[in-house]
Length: 141
Figure 1 (cartoon, rainbow, N blue to C red):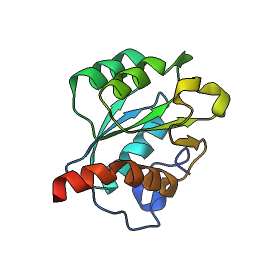
Figure 2: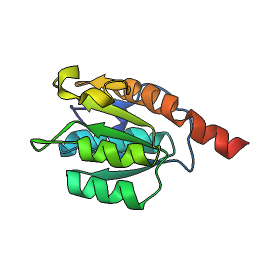
Figure 3: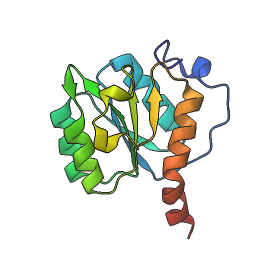
């Protein structure tokens, strides 16, 4: 699982599909989890950008281009709603992560893809590849 070690050789038991050129915003306050997510994104040949606090994530979301985002709902006790609002305003595809279940998600965002913690590298890859399909099509067409 991602929350365990971030040693890349033990995280990947799969051959990730390549997503060169895609930029992924990772919003996660637990550094080991953030590093594990960054490893998964890098293995997809995409560029990870990590923010551990709401203010930094919102700043990134409004000022930089992203092809997708992975957003933890609870960032040091603060809800990630402002991050979701900023990303949604720019039509960035989002996958939400949480260890608190669907009740931790504001109702207007409950339709977004959700990964419950703990999750595996394979689950993150599958969620990202689903979100990045438009990115892949844009580059190939």
